Length: 615
Ligand SMILES: [Zn+2]
Image (cartoon, rainbow, N blue to C red; front, side):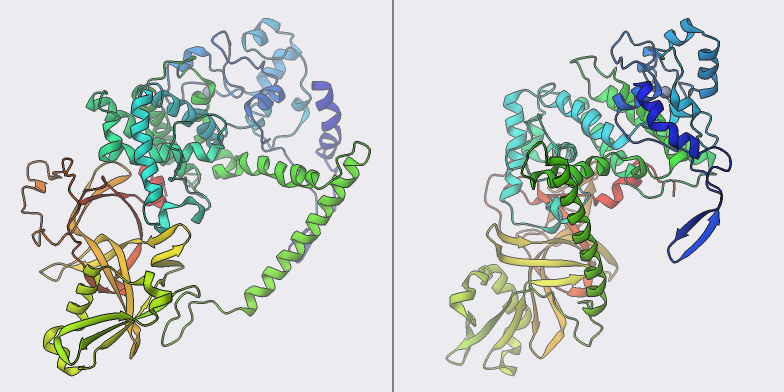
């Protein structure tokens, strides 16, 4: 292997010698300059086994390993001491000295190849760790998704929980796929968010893409908070249930934190130490709270490697820089897909793959040019006009509220195009609310022929869309949950969550949009790191629940949950708000099918700060 490396590296090492690349014209954008170029090796992206091969560490990972990590001197004893600075990074000069002095026992004790490594000749820009730091730095996201997340999921599903209990957890996760859609529930709407909807539940753990494991962890955390999902944990003590939930949430927050572009100021030594300690604490919690009894338990190099992540970030910046995901994905784009468009004949295969690849580059480049062009031609839809536009795919329908035969107390409500739009007709309690708000009895003589409401299904909210559509697509309805700004009885503003029920404007005043929402009460209860309980308002509720001891336990300031309710819910209490009172989308899931409570899930953009805020 080292002989192959030697050949592969020879031209690179030659190019790193003094003045080897003198007066090279170096263009950047539309400017260029003659420079004396030196290209040091920062890091190589790859997996653990590849990294060990490059660094010359024997690929031994079990309990007999004399060294467990290619970049430091940690032995198996380090498995039990998960704390920051418990190991010392290797210095390449030391190892080179051992090789030149033929210190074979010393190298053997480190599981280190007893020969010259061609990577010793490479320039690392002054990094003392040399190849031991550069060879595939601990790639936390991969190690988390495919390593620690998978192990934790296995420890819980099939470890702490038995099959009949996992069925309960699955049922509660599967029930979400039957709910009306809301924007934040489908991860396909956001490139980096974990999936929450699993039609087949989360009990199958084999052959899954890495991202799915994050989704399963997320779904498990949210389901464990619901009544029926929590029931799956009933055989565990309250403490172990809380421990598992907490450890999983911390893992998810750490995962989100790793995806940040910027972590801390590189000159801030305190922030660096804080980060190292926070990671170590998170790992200790995971080991303690999620017991892993199979295999070697938590005695795995992937756990130790996470301790190096803070140093890796200090050296190489945002963790996304060393993420192997994109490189692995390239393999699909650059090899697998072009190969699929060949005749698969041995003698023409390489030629055809490379031709298809060139075609792909040409098409991709052309597409880039076209995208640039179209940006300048098309106007941005949120136009600066007197009446802001509604999204292009919004559906319009009119509701006509009119007295029957001139009798002002008898009303008929109809939809203008009943055949096509019948499905858009709101339920009776919504119509009653509309009549009360828009056409109250004492005002009817002003419009004796009735009024028309122009309803619509979509509304811009910053660069997103709020939607309330009873028939969005083949999967059925879509009703978003949003955070709204309301005013209490003292006219003080407060924010709470609400479900969007209907949106409309008066044909004479199209710029004033109204949104009928089903709100939660002002008081909410933070339940775990990622979840909050909201109590939705119903017609049989008092106007404030904070004084109602049936709903709020004064001693603990916690909700008294309606676990025992199996009756259908009463009608929601609706309010109409100005569309400008909507703040942002939220994600809400029912506590159980007949519950007045909902579980609000913290926005993913907040997760990272829950782990650590070093900005
Ligand atoms: Zn180490």
